[in-house]
Length: 147
Length: 147
DNA sequence: TTTTTTGCAAAGACTTTGCATTGGA
DNA sequence: TCCAATGCAAAGTCTTTGCAAAAAA
Image (cartoon, rainbow over all chains, first blue to last red; front, top):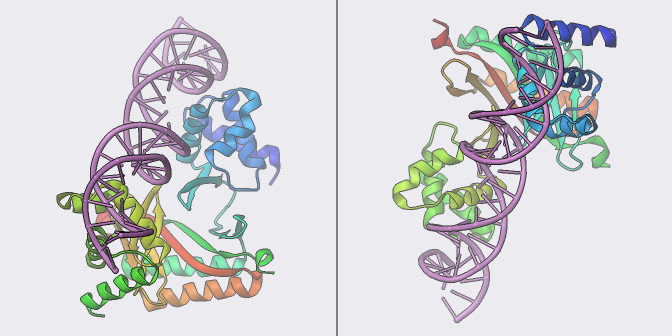
């Protein structure tokens, strides 16, 4: 999907939810759309320092983005990471953090997604709970650090 | 496995790692062995209030238990939960938190464990990373709240 | 204009640390 | 005895909140 279209779509989501399209929000939307990595609140803040956006504003907008489903929160090792959720489609995410170099990456093989869906369906069928969200975090040593 | 044997085994682990078997540690071991629920540091502290164990001591011992593999840390919704790790055997855990009532439970069907192992093996084979730990947290609405 | 949003400063919540005292081996 | 562990108080982090000023609609 087109980069600018994503931004327009997200802006629409915010407006539809009654939020104003402020300068800080536009900048933050761009950051999340462009970023390929998982970011903590302070990471976002650092990227906005030159724009004189305050840390409380970063926190407040992250909360709004989360609430409207634009981004997803991912707690890893006692830290809060955020990633774009919209446009991840039906895809479910499996994250991996290397304990040696700290890198966080995501596996997105169709095969794995199928296994996750099977797990979710198994639980819904056999336990009766409704599953809205599945977060898998694996940790170990990455390929590069193993060498 | 026998309850007292678990306690003795954990005490041995601590001693083998050069830690002294203090009153607060014995009490905390018992709490983790007896507890069926996931606990936050303050939950443990509350159970120890009458024994005049301080909060810093709870934090320091949790750190030691974690480091020696006695307990496992599980970050859910920006909070740190702990559960006994030793004796969970080869079992892998899938946790579920109900967004309505807040209950945290664990699924331990053999079927699910098999699926998780398949996922882990798939990743190790196809991506080359070594996976030491798999944490799955699902959220949604539990059976009871759905009614 | 009217209501939301923002920055700043301050407060809060949770966690860690310094240090003198206590306690386990 | 000797070093580790503890309690207390204080300091650190990260996150949230109150409020007046600024900006969006």
